[in-house]
Image (tube, rainbow, N blue to C red; front, side, top):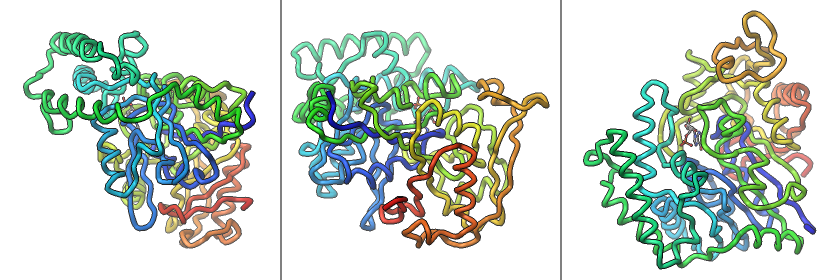
Length: 434
Ligand code: IMP
């Protein structure tokens, strides 16, 4: 029986909400921080002490001494990328090996998964998903097809043989897709070069604690230790509830915590839903409130809306409350966390979508992917706060017009805002009730 709970931090839009910062801020109140899905398609940016750190696979609690960071069974690991993260942390004076455990059931992204991702995207042409091309789709496909390689496999003498067999299968698939293997590069490297770096990455990972983290976590909960589960991507990119097929290949919602860490639903405590005061999306797929004008440009420029993993410019638009209501419902959000409202500090007015119409009729339920391409958002225009919120450290110090804007969101979603981020730094955060 658990004596404590797993609290969850999730993105409730299309990813890039700023979850990494919030995990880092809240991590001090927990014993363990655990990633439960996704892989190096994620880019979690954390700023403190004049430094910026970007993590892709490693949980964002890694900067806190005395905390254990878990890479759960639901996560995908690219040995090259995770070792680059480990090396960057080492340069910053942090030895990840001392603060991290890895699930023996976490699946590996092989170099050829990366190539397959690129080949499959290429084949889709104009219907491409806009994948980060980190091998996520093909690696989860192999996991579900029961032919993937897992972290636990790297210790067995059969590992090399299994690797070669899976690689041979991938090469055949690539050949059938007409993929030009000679010309292909993975992060600037040929397949042979990337494979060499990947194998040394595997060697390094063998020195880490690789264990059944589901047992580790359940024991910790029974002992009263607290766990913070860190989501990647966002609920609108969830493989079931996102705008399929323009989604990622994992369960990014609260239910994903149970399968991605092996903890029972009864262990879930608070669920923090992180959202930006406006919307962004990278890659293809419907985006009802998207802006194609100067305001959209302004949001992109002021919000530095370029991918932390790919550098791609993000699509931008107004806050979408019907979408938030949907993701609040799926996730059972208990507390909202609002990010990057400071980007709109100078706006005269701020728009928020409060509903959608389709073919002239008000939509009563959240649209399908096809409908979402055609819905017309109904907007409410609210006064801007026309002042900088960045210096506020207590909720009461925030401008009245901004607080009215937040009240409006709470009223429309029936939820409460617990955390207000007023800038990118760890310090620029207001936690209500503290
Ligand atoms: P994949 O997960 O790399 O296959 O990409 C599938 C879709 O999810 C694409 O539209 C990506 O741009 C998007 N995506 C994947 N990871 C992230 C993320 O961490 N932030 C935002 N979008 C993401």
